[in-house]
Length: 230
Image (cartoon, rainbow, N blue to C red):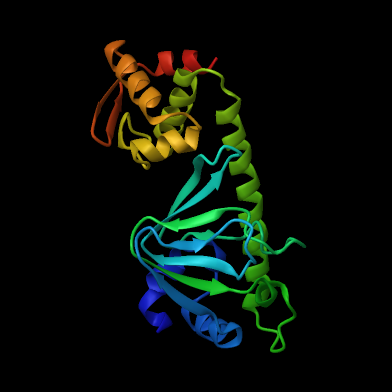
């Protein structure tokens, strides 16, 4: 069955540098499990016992947290080939630090953390590569969390939006791009209310800084976005 997801595995950072034959041997050793989830299903709930690193084979999931008031905040949205649970995989607490919700019908492959770092009885050549990949993923995640803190440290609504738009501009290299998050998801991500976010988007449009239509955004004044962050 794993041949069906060959292309997805090739995109997954956890399996970079590991060829198809090695993947077949790996899954024979690890014996991972797969699970299917419907839209809005909870794949994992914060505080519950951790049950393995998830590799998203198809669909889309949101990693969320709730604050003391019970308001949900989206930390990130993941698509096929991306993983979740890696931050909890090697913690002594062994509980999910965030709630994972299926945004669409999704299929997830779960790997135990012990299978990744445990000693391989067959001394397979790919095992060292797998460990190195995991270390790189954890390092990149730490950098991403620092970026999230940067957004939260910006006091003004316009500054938060501007920082996010500039980040998308840098990723795409285009002044016109499709937003990766819906308006409600972006509000959760920036820890602001949906109505306040929409009002500020309209003000930025009226000020000639951006244009938008549905999920498409055009940056008209990069300098003003940079000024808003400062």
